[in-house]
Amino acid sequence: MRRRILTLAAAAAGSALLLAACAPSDSSGQAAQSDEEVTLKVWSWRTEDIEKYNRIFDVYEKVHPGVTVEFEAFQNTEYNQILTTGLAGSDGPDVPMVRAYGQLQPNIEAGQLEPIDGIVEGLDDIAPSVLAGAQGREDGKLYAVPLATQTLQVFYNKAIFEENDLDVPTTWDEFIDVNETLLAAGVTPMALGAKDAWMLPIFSDIVGSARYGGSDFESDILDGSKTFEDADYVASLQIVDDMQKYLTPNAVGVSYTESQIQFTSGQAAQFPGGSFEIATFRSQAPDLDFGSYQVPLPDGSVSENPVSPAYADGNFAVNSKSPNKEAAFELLNWFATPEFGQLVADELNQFSPIPGVTYSDEVMEEAWDNFQKGQAPYLLLVNFRYGEPQGTAVLGEQVQKMFLGESDPAGVAKALQDGVSQWFTPGS
Image (tube, rainbow, N blue to C red; front, side, top):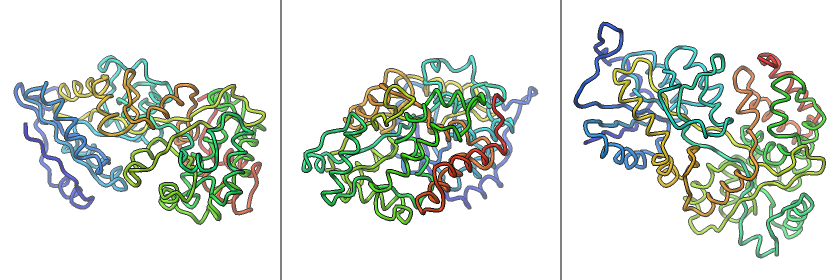
């Protein structure tokens, strides 16, 4: 089957949506479905993955004669508005890629997506923190199949470690020794683009999640038995502040992109970030020999083991106005299979949440193995993006202030608690 693969600018997409004709409907209110050939429109914000999705959907079409998958990718920064317009009209996608957690809720609350409970099989073994990204906040129903799991850890340059006779740290003292040794050798220990505030909650959880208690703290704060002003959470922020000496000088003036270049060019020995960086590092520096590790347990940690915080990154859903729901649900069932999960790993270089997937890339395999040994939610993204101000936004801004000497760990914790308390009700 021939498939159109498109990248549309926001303006062109808006015009196309306005000019589109309505799909015919039967007496039940659902659009008529063809018994022969079906074209499924799949929308995404991943313009960089067009060719890869082309190969993925070729696999699907070969065993689904009569089905053509038309993949359309839009600019990431314009996608949310384009999708909202498309789902509200009659010419939207049959299968949209949708955001996760709090950013998914507006589509659910508007009735734009079909529940998939009892329709899509094979989702029971997905990590709860990942599956939660595809659920309705109020009704608890599933509305999408998770696409990828992102894990957070520290990447390190193996050549720089070898040159300085360093091993991957397994204790907190060893972690500090690694950073002190690099600092003394004139090597920036860690590259962090603190100018982009969204990186700071990631960094905070990489070095501090085990200290405040990871999943156990999540349960406590959700039921109201603890707040972000809890002593253990404040202690985790103190670690973030203490790490400043090991970061790129004037980290608040360094952008995320600049920090990536610092790591891939060998100017910095380590990069605290997400597994989504692996493909970027491979592209920017094909010869870079790097690995990853979990930050060892800080003194006083509530968690018993080091952890890799994680979250769901993107989901596939079915448009409630799709004229091809039967075919769309069949595609979603395929998205929940190990076959598709393996294609996500091999073609997209992402961690699939589907059990049974293996990774040929050694850095991906190492990062995934780390995650399997100790897991925690990326707390503020998973649980505190359901209202305004979002927890990640508050913490990012407040850590910047702390790095600039305008606040301290207790002040950051108070500002975070005050911010989320404007909309978050414990136990709800």
